[in-house]
Length: 178
Image (cartoon, rainbow, N blue to C red; front, top):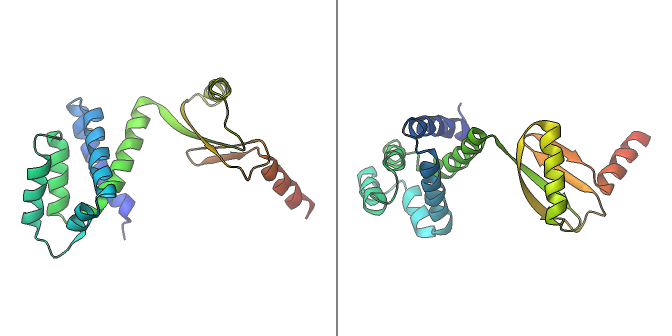
């Protein structure tokens, strides 16, 4: 049985390919992020789309009334297709996957840096430059402060995680000793 993410991936890939063909990948990505944001913030809109009681035709009319002329036609037709196929629940997943595909298209890789204290911009730039060189990627750095860390850094990108924190090193040492 297909998972939600694998089903959403099909829609994402199709929308991305069509947007690339028309040189509108950024616009469609912005539209999808905006629609997903609206559904995340507006409980009434979320309930409207999630309701199995509301007929597809009524949902399609609402989509056209709200989004026609405000979003790219690719986005509008994707939303209408999702309504027609009763896949409205996939919008957030499609928006996330589309954003990831857009970053990949640009050669960007998200890098999460977790530290005990906020790092200066120069320290982050230096870390980014060094990691860009080591891994041959263009990292987009986001920073998070975790006051439970004693010191050091934790890095995460893609499916890789590097724990250079003191806590991580102590945990590794304890597992070696046991």
